[in-house]
Amino acid sequence: MFSSLQVRNFRVYWFGMFVSLIGTWIQQVAQSWLVFELTNSAFLLGVVGFLGSIPIFFLSLFGGVLADRLNKRNILILTQSIFMLLAFALAILTQTKFITPAQIMLIALLNGAVMAFDAPTRQAMVVELVGKTHLFNAIALNSISFNSSRIIGPAIAGILVASTGMSGCFYINAISFLAVIIALWTIKINQGENTSKSKSAYEDLKEGLIFIKNHRLILALISMVAVVSLFGVAHIILMPIFANDILKVGVKGLATLMSVSGAGALVGALILARLGDFKFKGKLLSFSNLLFSVSLVIFSLSKIYWLSLVTLFFVGGASVTSIAVVNTILQIRVEDKFRGRVMSVFMVTFAGFMPFGNLIAGSLAQGLGVSFAVMLGGLICTAFFLTVNILFPKIREI
Image (cartoon, rainbow, N blue to C red; front, side):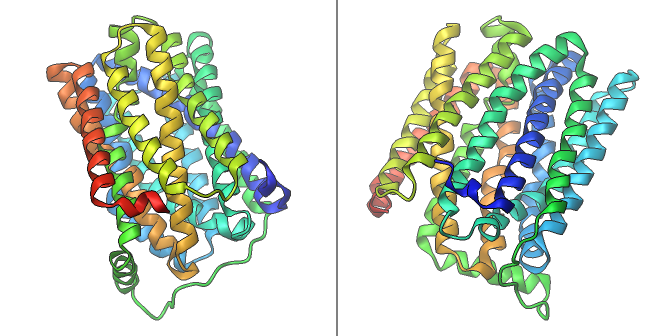
């Protein structure tokens, strides 16, 4: 289950990133609650989510080009350092009571711009840390760290918001970035094959998009990720409304809701890590997509706290299983010199479409209610996945 941790470089990187991710989730919960406290607006919650991800849509492709040209470790040291400075800025503004919704939006926008270069580089660097032998296990362990932090981070945030205030959450996040920065400084990696720097960035980008266009399997997999990101994950940004207005469980209930979703994702990632390079990836992918969308619909209709917790557990588990399988198939089938650009397209669909989903869901929630907004997204996902399974039966044979 943990075979890739035997590789020193990946082990050091993994633990450093794990600490940092816990801090990130602490900030995510505290920031959502701060926005809701300042504005009492579902729409503005959606706007903050939109601004935090929209730069990924516009800039991530160039982040992939950069990852294929330069040393990935050095790129990550720079991006993680900027994340740390932005977290300190948010903490200081909140502590001194100068914080405004506009400032939160600006910091979210800047974080998104940095993430556009950070995310595809992180995805593409995994194979350089562990090699293709341990690649599937390493991707599963990255999912484990991400989703373990979804359990630990919100739980800590619920305690800190009540005891030290939201500024304390932001300070802890800022400090947590030191773990991954130090880890990156201490590892040495064998840089994969780079693109020719004699070409322009535009030519590199065009070459990468043509490569994807000519591989229908890659297009089909990426379309699945796009639909989930556009219509399936906006419930996260609306979770404060579910906790406060529908389920009436407050900030501690909010932390529990997000932690249970993370617990489901963690279980899914652990199962994947244990399975190894298993057969029937396509069947698991199809099942996970349908389980995700149906569970999301049930969650949207639930007004019972325990039922909401159960459905969120399945939403979390199914989503991480689907994304991890897609990620692995993409990385295995892509040449080293194209990996950064292909993973940048993956990140555009995975994270770059989220702002549009957040904005749509926030607008629908403001006018028609959060339950309707999330239910509609779940129904669209269900219809799409059923259609893909009918039109592309070969996906189930992967």
